[in-house]
Length: 433
Image 1 (tube, helix red, strand yellow):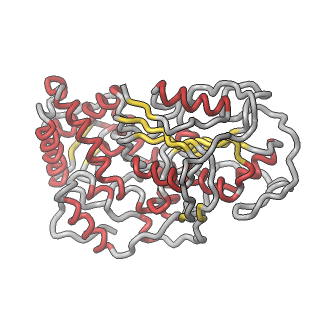
Image 2 (cartoon, helix red, strand yellow):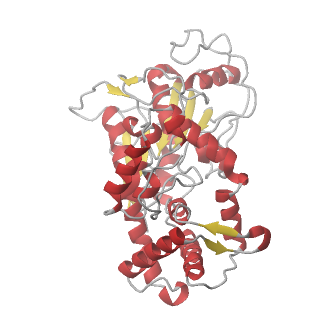
Image 3 (cartoon, helix red, strand yellow):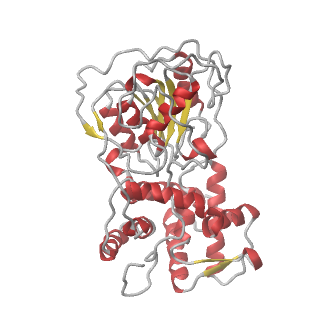
């Protein structure tokens, strides 16, 4: 069901793929809970599980030295492992003092509504491993699970890293619409880079020319879908699909990704001019993933999590009004991110959210230009947890940092914390080269 419109305008129909990061459902049966664990929401029993006998599942270190790991978030399941954490010499909790004068206030935490694995599942895993405490690396939506675990099982965590943290009030269907401004910011930086390489990509010589050209391509796609490729690998890109290509790529500001995005956006522009387009093998693979059944399983599971973790407006007219309000200022991303989604037609069982009442000594990573979980969303859990430390990466339009982005300053700071168990004395700052 699409939002009613006076005419078919750019971005007025919902995008085909579901975007954004979310935790995945497990495809294997969960092990039965050990006697030392209770379901999510119950305090753990005082009985200590047996001593550890197996090696770490998250880090490439020796079984005798490594803390037990639980990883959550899409990259924990789908991306190549990051740099191995140095061997840990101790299993004691992090030490140090909270910031002077910090006041702890109860705050609404992430909901535990979704049918995907809940924090209590990790207690079962911890018991199965025979560990008294586990360490946790959460990426993106997985940081919500990590925050919940600190509240429900405060004595069962050792080292905790929250990478690309989400703020509780932005979870659920509201997660993506709240990132419009950050995506526009990342787009402006990409447009500057593309303009400096106009001779190669032909997208415009200034940021304004590149932006205007992309909008013309979207308008052309609204009038008639643009044909990219041929034969079995022919794709029709309409006004809902062209912005998706931008949105997907803007979460990574590395030079190879920025160059790939420029090539990808040059091809619809050529199709709009009536020229035949033969995409590269990499672009063809991306189009298959986004616009065919190949990517429907991960996209569907991500959308299901978003739908389960919060309410969504039911009236299609409400979405149309949001699109019209945002279109003037954000013509590329407001129609895409404010559009109606399957969440409007789903009723999933839910429960009360967890409140942040206990302090927790965790390390939070946040990039100032993150277009998926904005920097302000990293600051929010930092204020909720006075004993935490916030590592800021300045000048980066990137989602997902540790072991993924290649910033030595970030990786070294996280590795030092994982190895020694001590948080930095102050909130560290790194800079994109």
